View 1 (spheres, rainbow, N blue to C red):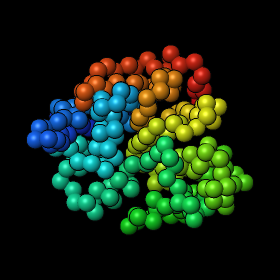
View 2 (view 1 turned 180 degrees about the horizontal axis):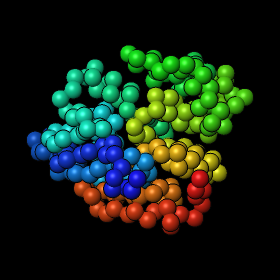
View 3 (view 1 turned 90 degrees about the horizontal axis):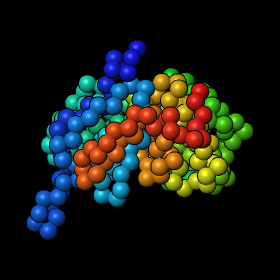
View 4 (view 1 turned 30 degrees about the vertical axis):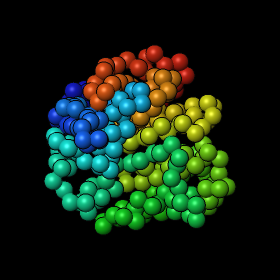
Length: 243
């Protein structure tokens, strides 16, 4: 299947997100339209205030647009109730955070299983799947360790496995290598390469150019609008591993 024939996972049409500050309306995103398709690997970049965090919050359904249409796999999000959005978020979206956001009292397997808890129709054999994912991201032998017994890189591997447990349509990563040393960050980006090669849709917010260059495409934002689209990012990368 060619790129243009791939399913549209996230469709944003004329999206605006505004705030009232000091009696004035300030736009974090203004009349923004874009499609993200199945299997694409995007880095979203821009300076502070460019709108990249706002875009991620809208894509993740943490925030709602002031105006415009946002669809996930063809389903309009704007009219959904909070409970419906929570269910959709748990089913269709996987999250990877800079600070890992693991639960200290839970071991690796139970942290990976957290998204399953919030599903009305949990996946079958969830614990077996969590174990397989933990081993897939290199955590064999660490399955019953708690976060304080793991390195930063290992904790981020747990977060990656957790993001995959419900087989989401899209993985959203927010500065996923920001707290890691360069060698460990490279290992995590290698995992993203593998996920991309397996057909996962990845949207990675980053301010680091070398991280962005590992993606397939780069979407640059400025003042809440698209500054540029670079679809040759991976060919410019110097340290990537294509799988």
